[in-house]
Image 1: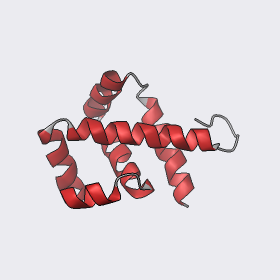
Image 2 (image 1 turned 135 degrees about the vertical axis):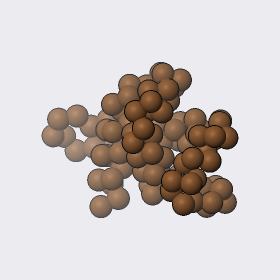
Image 3 (image 1 turned 180 degrees about the vertical axis):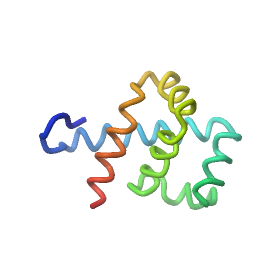
Image 4 (image 1 turned 90 degrees about the horizontal axis):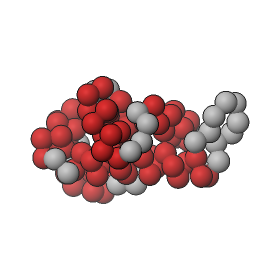
Length: 98
């Protein structure tokens, strides 16, 4: 993903989207995690399915993970990604939305 002051590339965008998709998969793998995500975001399961792949849902997933350090660490360890990659993905996708 983009580092320093350089402009994000399509590859950076794809990497951020991939982390978000991994996050959504991680949440969906455990009913308790998914139910908590749905409750806190106010989303319904059908909305999640319909919005999968959108920047808005990607941001919701990543912000949910970033907002709970223990959940973030479990996610990062289970997917072999650096925990800080989630916050970088949030920044990149939030910038793409603007």
